[in-house]
Length: 350
Ligand SMILES: [Zn+2]
Image (cartoon, rainbow, N blue to C red; front, side):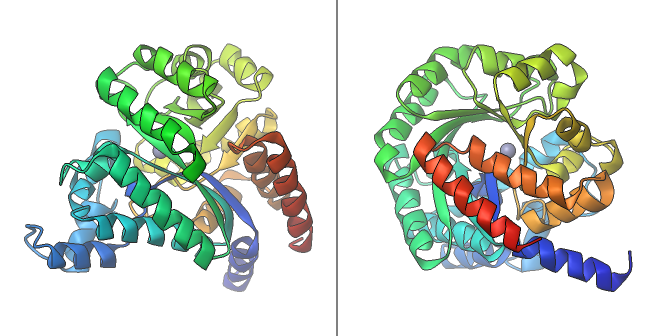
C-alpha cells in the first residue's frame, strides 16, 4: 500500500462510529495530566518530564513483551489519584479522548481499589466521582458512556463483595457491569463465583478477563461458574474446540485487544494472532483498546493493525462494531435502538 492509500484508510477508519467495550480508565491517562498532577501534589518522582514518565507509564519499544511487566505499569499509575479533582480529571479526559477517536459507545472500566488506595478514599466516593465526571464528559462530547467496576483476581472476597455492592448501588449513575481482571495464571476465578452470580442476578453485566495469560479452560470457568456474558480477550479459546462451541452456543462476546496481546506476550507477532480465525468461526468478536495510553494506541490504530497485519476486511471491522452493540450491557430495547443508529451510520462510511 502506498502512503496515500494508508492515510486514506486511516481517515476512513477514524471516521467510523465505533464501540469500545474493553477500556481501562487506569490505562487511559494522558502523560501531560500525570505530570501536572504529580507536580501540583508533590508526588515524589525523580523527574516530572513527560518523556521521563513515559518509560514508567507506557510500554516503550525496548520493553520486552511480558504480562507482569505490563501489569507493573499500573502499580506505578496508582500514585496519580491524590484528590477528588484528579480522579474527576482523568475520568473526564478518558471519555473525551475516546470521543476524539469517534467512539460513540464506550464502556469504561476501573478498579475502585486503584483509585482509592493512595489517599484512603472510600470505594463509594471514588465511584461517585468517576460517575459524575463521565456524565459531564458525555454531555460535553458526542459519546455515550457507561461504567464497569473491576475486581482484581488477587483481592480478598471481602473487598470483592464491597466493590460489588458499590457497583449495584451505582446502577442508576451509569454502572452497568462487573469485571474480574489481573493475574489469571496465578489466581483462579472460581472463588468469586457466588459474588459474580449475585451481581448478574441483581442486574449487572458480567465480563471476565480470561483466555489471555491463561488457557481456554479459564474461559469455560468464567462462563460456567461466574456467569460471564463477555470475556476480556478470550483469544486462547481457540486452543480448545469445546470452548469455542461453548462461546458460540452461549452467544458470548469476546473483547479482543490486539496490541495489548502483543505487549503481554499472548502472541509474538500480529500475524499469529487468532482474530481472523475467531471471526471466521462466527463468534461474537469485538475489537477494543484495553489501555490506550499504556499501549500508545487508539481504536483506529487497532482497526489499522487488524486490517494490515491480520487480514481482517473493512466489512468485518463494521461487523465487529455491530457485535459491540449486541454485546453491550444494555437492555434489549436500548441495544436495538443503538444497532439501528450504528447500521445507518456505518452505511454512510462505505
Ligand atoms: Zn483489560
